Amino acid sequence: MIRDEGIAESGDSSEEALSGLAPGRLNRRSFLLGSAAGLGAAGLAGCVSDDMGRAEAARFYAAVPNEKYPIPAVDIGKLHPKYFRKIVRYESKEAPGTIIVDPANYYVYRIEGDGNATRYGANVSRTGFLWSGDVYVGRKAEWPTWTPPKEMMARQPEARKYARGMPGGLENPLGARVLYLYKNGAYTVYTIYSTSDPETIGQGITSGCTGLLSQDMLDLYSRTPIKTKVVMLPA
Image 1 (cartoon, rainbow, N blue to C red):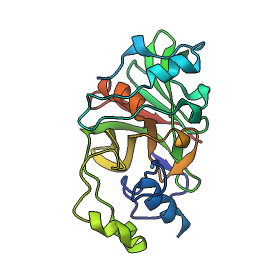
Image 2: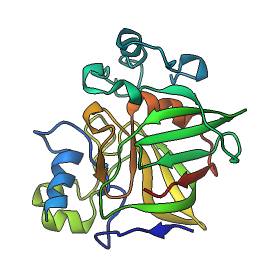
Image 3: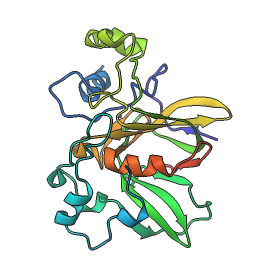
């Protein structure tokens, strides 16, 4: 069961729960930080090892030019090495494929079995929007449309231009890929989404959603079928 640890606003949707792109333009950060004041994939063989240096990581987090909207390379200088994707020892009773979100440490784990997991650096919920419990992936989307909720448009008039939806693209708050989280057949309004802003990784900035770098999200998304269990640990 999901435990609400202090949702600050009723009526939040996953679109409003996001933040992440660089400031200075109409995007998830300009919307949501303002709101807070009033969120081909590489397989296991491509994962970053514990001793990988920044030069190797830069190649791993290189641009993805063959996407519908080409994804830029990650500025590794803005990402702490502890958040590079890695295979790590992680003992768990959960089945392989299960996703575990650890908001206290800003990590997302994909259980691989035999005491191993793929670990991704993440951004997570900010204070007042924390929750925990077991959910599952009920829907997936590539380059989805984003529609700001009415509550956001009331607070931030600049969002009204997207009342009929912002098409998919690099400026879209949901990013290149999104996993929609469900409970008992109902959408929880929370997601695991992709961001191109490395400065958000290791930060509590969203209203309940969890963000991975686009290159990491491509990997997780490609290996996550519908109905995959997702465990949100207490923060």
